[in-house]
Image (cartoon, rainbow, N blue to C red; front, side, top):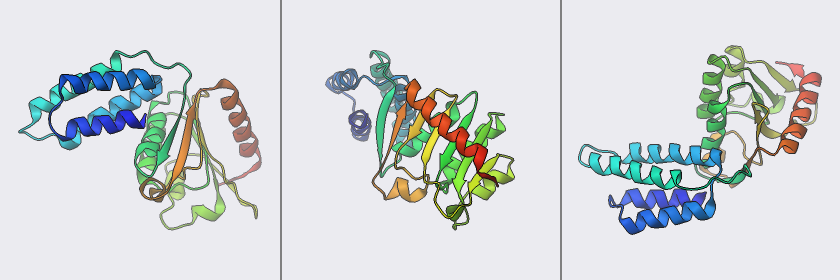
Length: 226
């Protein structure tokens, strides 16, 4: 995934997207063979890059660049395995988390040590306002930290359970629609995106999703209400 994103950034930077560059991009995409989730993420990256670089003077180039970059994605055969890893620092992990939150249509189960990244919090609240059932499990030691968004999430009506024991609920995972799982070291904080070397894994492996869903249900049934 990262080679594709890096190539997209380079291709838009010099305001010239040659035929050989378009061919190279198609070859990279075909080699990586992104799955459906990754293709959706890459399409969103194309529009974010275009928006960040667009000016009245380069409007025609930007429109053509979007068309050609999107075409390279459309002409590949998706990888149906449904798993990939993402890394920080940078926005990639955060964007994947928000993408999965925004794509959810049935329910969202979040089990994370701390939430203080306002952009992720906004995506959660947006889904809650769309009437998508959201549940959050977190740890008591971090929810009172400066910048913690747990109280804000609770105030809008999202049900939250807290580990109030002397130990830590240190999980960092999310299940959406009982089909997709995100897990890894990535903390849902601004520092994780800006500074830390972190990772997340996005998978649709049914066995993994089922195991994490079981853990979520077990914790939800035993931990205290916010």
